[in-house]
Image 1 (cartoon, one colour):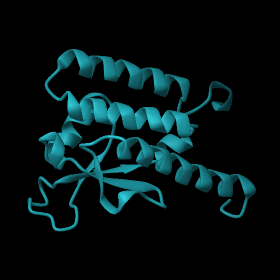
Image 2 (cartoon, helix red, strand yellow):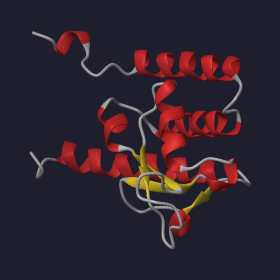
Image 3 (cartoon, one colour):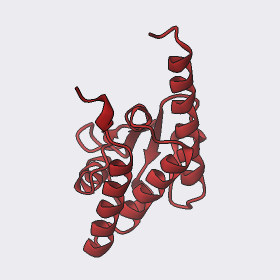
Length: 146
């Protein structure tokens, strides 16, 4: 499977999606990407400028159905149980058919959550938008279920 043209395209799409998310984060004054971007399948975002630690950001994003992992960053000052960063991976959304535009939208939603952590109305709206995105890109297409 890894030798097929489709798998090569999938890998390339993962990179494009990651880079599109990095562009979105780069446009935000508070967002600081460790290594200023990515040339692989993941991003590491320092969340301290949002007044959060990684554990808090992970929990907050989980409430709106966006899955990330708390992650230590270089020169970490917090314990591994809290961390200063979150890890954002793109293989799962790419497998669902998300493209660059969708990935940029996911990054915008992540920023909206981090910037509005105490606004229940905003969080509810983000959760609705996440559902719209995932409904548009189901894990299994109806015609693939046997």
